[in-house]
Length: 150
Image (cartoon, rainbow, N blue to C red; front, side, top):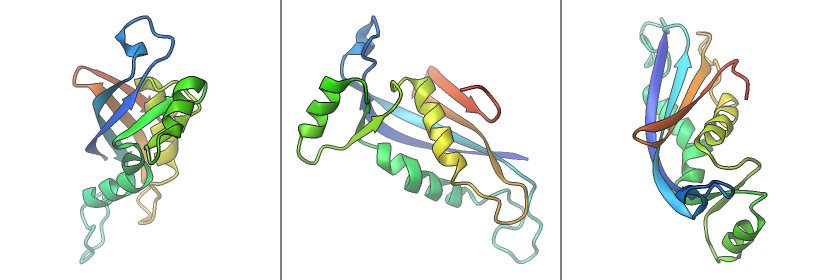
C-alpha cells in the first residue's frame, strides 16, 4: 500500500548559471509530496489500526526535519559564494546553504535523502519512503524515487 502526504512552504532561491530569469533572486510557493509504502497495520484497538502511517505523523516528521527549516528561507548553493556571503551577512536571515544548485531536481533529491532517515518501520509493517515529489510551480515538479540514480 502507498500513502502520500502533501505540505507547502515558501522559499527563495536562484540558479546562478541559468540563462533565463531563474538566475535572479526569486521565490516560489513550493509543495512537497511524501509517498510512503508499507503494509496496512492490523492492530485491533490501536490508534493506527488500518493505516500505513498516521497522516498527522507523516506531516509532523516532515515539518520537524525539513519543511520548517526550508519554509521562508533562502536556499542557496554553497558555490554561489557572493550570494551566500551576502545572505549570511544579514542579521537573523534564514538561509539554508546547500551543496547542490537549488533546482527542483536537486531539492527533491536532498529532501529524499533527509526524509529517508526519518520514516522508520516502528510497527513492523515494512514502512519506507518511496518518493519525494517537489513542485516548484503548479506545472513543474521533480520526483526523487527510491532506487533511482541521483
